[in-house]
Image (cartoon, rainbow over the protein chains, first blue to last red):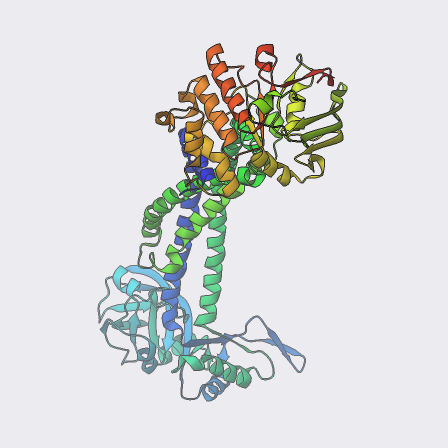
Length: 396
Length: 240
């Protein structure tokens, strides 16, 4: 059998149905805002995490260009990973795969169309160690090149197409021949973004751009991902033993950094959603105060015939709770529909929508909605319970 | 020697020897912006168990203040009010609430039923307050029946009942926790003559069953039902 104070609250809500409904709509909006925004943020994080975690076994090493070292009073600034540092890295990395990388940006011309993209220089034998071609083969000749999916699509490239590398209107621009095409790789956490890149043999690269024994980046692909920390430490101990000359990072630290940033963005948009709950809280508070003010006489009767203050408080908190349950219930259902639509429209992928990290924002939003309602009812309930029964009975 | 029998003895009832309610030099002063207003001025009186007392007086004489004191809705500014042997001023607010619930039954002029509850639920309500659960013993229905309330009307809300029906429900509500004191504030004031007399018959019956009935009225004919009339004027007892 139900608590009579709960029954009284239900009947009060029914009696003022329209007013209660309108107040609950505020909670619906608040719950939808919080849940949908939360789910959007969570789906963004999950999506990015999934993309980046494929390269989680890669250690990236670059020159610590920020730091200026001083040797015998002569300042020098590192600009790349040197040959001797590369050797130290190889020694420290043991049997793991070490891939030195040259990288620059350049204009190029395909047919009569100009473009711009990244130029990577790899040892052709290294390409297959971390890239898979969709068409063609790795560079076999000195002037062969592999192109990324965007360039291939945008310029209608096929195996055998020719690309002139260098700014237009430059005489004797070198030409490479497309030997293979890479599939779309997206944003890669190993620092090698090939979609808008042309990958040439390292010999071709150093012939054109110099820097023969200096590399822009060195990647170490660790065979056993559990040893990645030990490999990083070994490299650090070997190369940075005297001064910090190289910077070592891995996909997990980048992943952490990116997910932290996305987490901050999610918190921020949740806070914006939270504003609508604040507005809803004011609305609930207003409705509760109206309910108390309209029922002063009834409160007087209740108190005069022996109702405890706590029971009067409970009655009004039930009323706030009922408004919260209605708002949160409807809000929860709307959140699922709206959240799904928003995630679908903005991320284009709903694969993660029903994962706990995402879907839990719905019950969380509902819970916050109910808590906000109850919190909004605290003062009105306190006011009702502390009325003087004589004054309350007098007011009709 | 034959002794003269009192009316109570003739009815098979006897008044208790100890006062159920005792006011000792009770004053109630309201501190208003216009100055202090003394609503009760050094009032001392005893009301014995199973007494039927009427409190009368003109408007502003202190009747309502007296009712608030007897109903423990308020405490004296000075003096002592003892109900059932307990000093009201020394009780905690919760103890006073429980005494209102268990020892006193209120019957108001305007009935003061809870509008959101049915007639039955209004009567059941004090039982719920006391036992913290719904009435499964059938007591609420029994008490409603005992005051002559039509069972068919039990599910009706107060606004669907006549004045007489509402007052019967109010009396049933006052009785359901079996209180020692029934406090009635102009119980017939909002009723026609015939219904008023029926309600008074009910109160007389309750007194005969052993209840202490205290009645505030300015209707002298109604006051005649009581065995003692306390006259108040300007916050003082002028006749008892």
